[in-house]
Length: 478
Image (cartoon, rainbow, N blue to C red):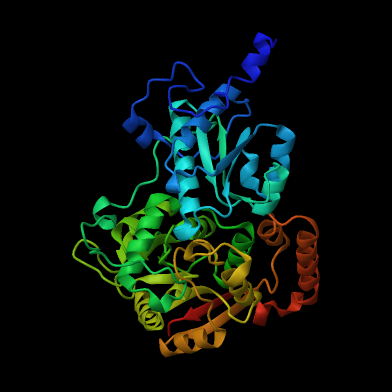
């Protein structure tokens, strides 16, 4: 006979008979309005360490299995991992599995419902059910797709080979719960009746296939929907600070009582505008962007707050910068996202915005560097697919293609700018970048990659000027 304590630790799980919905692990169920739960749910990234009672875990799992599945096969298996040691092992495969006291491994039959990814669809419906149920129970979830090696996850939790790990759902009590969810794309932009009536957003990283209007729509949505707070990676920030110190004077010869003006071009999320304004406090910063909302956001990140201007389509309410106004114009990792024809127009505009004798501070990624072949490897086989995962410096959002240094020089000369300074940095990845990029690689593979990067760093340390990924240029307007 089991004790009351045993029953509390291992609640009755419904027996082995068919589940007709008349039984559920938690009795009574909490009273929660569907619409409140739907609109209140958030992705939780930080959890309390407090264990989750198994009766609550079972209720979340039970909600999951009442999702629809292809042909009603229900060929899913769920492994709820609440053993701290096993969760630590899972976290070694992917850091995202190290944040919550429970990781629910979601698997589906490998050879069931493969047509049109119906197996993935079935498992996804189950995960959504569990996410909503957790919200109703006062818990939080995070849907993890980057699990590292899915086959290793399968083996670690004892799933048979014919089960495919689809995702992992982190579950626990929220430590930090966002008060507001990310803004959503307007309903009218994503819904259609009977026939599609919108403009398709390209899935390619090639700037040449992106219409400027679509790029503006995409970047506006991504920035305003949650990418605004990204921070530059440490190795990117070091490169920017080194280039500033080497190329751009901290002091200015502006008249007494006035601040020289600096225009940051297409800053997107504004994270570099903020960094620039903190490092060069003697300047008054403005920004120029594609949409008024993004321009306003970025300008308010400057210290002190600046003004937002329009390019390439100004209007009465969203005007362009005044010609001949700025002592410094900066354009950091933005040319790589433009079509060739649009780059030429931007060069002309930047020349016009500068005062005579003004400086253009340019940063770009070189296609003569290791970046070019690592990005090709990622796109083909060695990393997450999709335009959002392109190996570009923050704050890139959208297409990105490294540029040939010679082409950049020719375009600058054609725009009437004179080169006055040049700095190339990071011919090989920095140690902290290597650690970051290989954080989910364990065993021999990770060691080989990290050792190879260290050796390359020593061998090519003097090649940064010509082969550095980050190329910075300083130009002067005559």
